[in-house]
Length: 331
Image (cartoon, one colour):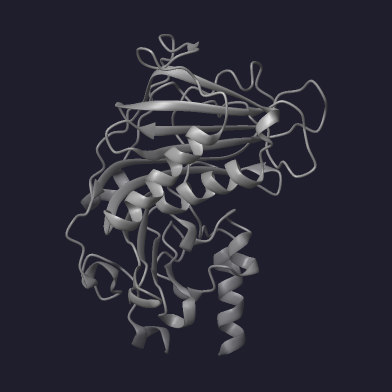
């Protein structure tokens, strides 16, 4: 029985995603002036219009992109009297403030996550995931409330209906996965989110999904992977994600250094929420004088902060979810 489960798990992860969030929108035109074969067709529009997604008909959901970026031009200021900073410190402080907000004001949220990643040199298809996330809380060193994540895939068709459920300290740290898609859609398994098979389908674990991990990733890159003397910072005016005004910040490394894993990073910060809602990075090209290659893009839209999430939202028995019963798995 165990060997059969292992074989099924391998088959499942041949097409399974278990990771963080993804892309859809922003002015990335100035990275590849002429798209390379890896990046062709992946440039992001200056603004993105995402259609309202109906959870009751997930397989029919659609997300529309607005590719009209003719009005968006790179400029040296964003807003009256604001100039691009001469150092990374203001950007680090902005990210630190967003992180503090999440630690003190945001108990949970729902959102639509859109992601695209390059894995083993191949640019994967764009995936759309509806998320419910409840943040962990501590009392000193004691865990008061565990991290909880539920995700349902809406697009593409090959994974539509896939469901993920992770509750910290449950299932020995495994994530519960319902396969979805068109083949064996009800197959339900428990998978190690940090295991080798999981990493074949994503650059990040499911526990790194959402806004807080995005903030932490941005902070890590600003602090440890960038030489402040080796960057050019640019701001763009009138940037939007899902129709919402944002600050668009681009950090470009001038010379490649041994510790730098990417050449260009782009962040969109929602002006009202004061939270990053878009992140993309581009790797150094293999050949000099060629364009950077897309590594990953993550857009988080339709955000609702502090909704009334309950334990049932993170319970496999929720009548809105389609995980197989535990009794069925033992047959």
